[in-house]
Length: 358
Image (cartoon, rainbow, N blue to C red; front, side):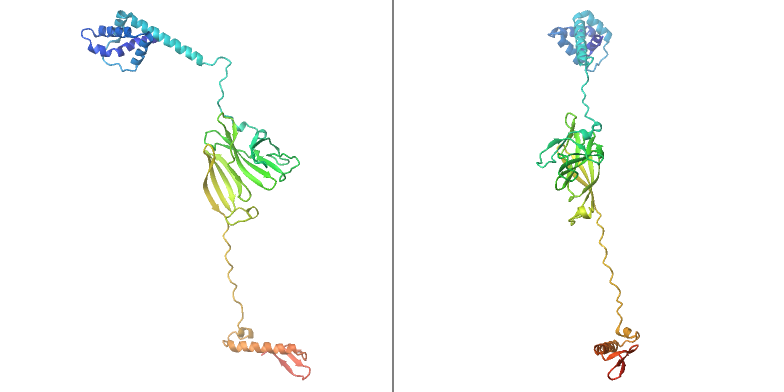
């Protein structure tokens, strides 16, 4: 029983008394212990004193068996006080343990957060500000006709894609991973908001509230075709990494001409908002084509035109060419000159034969 241990602890609580005893240290220790117990106003307080003595290191060479016998012989109240208080403490401990044990049929409370992988997202209620008013509302999704894996909220059933107001979620493209840093996997989706004139594209994250229930956070990223396109995203290591393509700085129509800048950004959730950290930015704009080299100068010199490439008298050659051209103009302007033979011309009035060649 536990009280046997308490008896042994009497040794630790009276060692100082033993040190001061003269002829019979055991008897003196027993006497001192009895006086200490008698001085206590209740057995419980006495027992508390014994509990405190448990933590003290026992020192000296006192014979514990001899001391126990002396205490039992000289101070029966010590044995009674220790025994009663110990049994009372045991009874209270047993009663407390019994209260802590759940009764049969009682279920343990489930504190585990909802596993987002088990949710049928197409049937989930979504909160969005994709409305003409801009107010946040709760909407239900239905399948987009002839587009597998895409679900939308379409207030007007007559609206097709790109007509009227629609909120579309790429349900089948969900990516799971811990992006909020709470150690629990989140769910990441791409969505689109169309209000009749243009699309807003978004990256949205479902996480958990304080009760572990699914909660849709504010969009991580909202962008238009003028800002760029999201190529891919992945969720791991307490962050959401988004790969985007953005227009070159001077590009006016990127949705027509393409997005030349590849950007990688890590998004972290600080508990209230998303914080962006750019990882890399690569401009893939091709280098401009080099200007073409000038064509070689193939112009013939005057002497080359006359058939005298070896001649270096360009002035004579140029004058000769001018004379030949003047001669030809005169013949062409006078109808009396007609072709005669090869480069020869005949004047019908005078019968003269001439040529403009040298």
